[in-house]
Image (cartoon, rainbow over all chains, first blue to last red; front, side):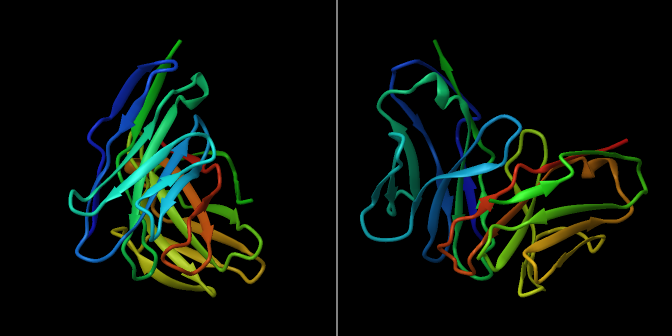
Length: 113
Length: 111
């Protein structure tokens, strides 16, 4: 069985401050890891993905995530957040089979002006 | 992209509902997810080449169809109050490392 744990349900942070959203996973096999972002009243959009190779992956809007196999983590970071980053962020994994993707419960990032 | 209809729907307990989705062109797999308020999306089932290719922990009254023209449906019979949720359709290529492309969802309210 596979599972994803997002340790923080809400994270308030001041604008231009750094942020880390935590994600831990459990799987008995190799995994593919994803971060999705959901803005109010919208579906989920892919933010970044780890498939293989370099353990540090980056998105086009300044977010990055590091795959740590020994700690089974895939934390999301941004050195300086903007108001527009206010959204809910979901960590997800796919460990094979028929492409069932398991999501965490989400972390609401609230950027304070 | 992926489009879903309708955007909102209100039904009464015991009724049946059909939600529709149009996949992104070129994608051969469609998945449906249920997102209850304050929760992450839960996998309902996946269709590939018009056949169900995997199912999550949902009862048989949840069923689906995938058509050759990139469209698909989610049907729910005998609606229950707990079925109230955002239903998300996602299309992708049939590969474990293929990201999901989501529609904006259908908000279903069961009264």
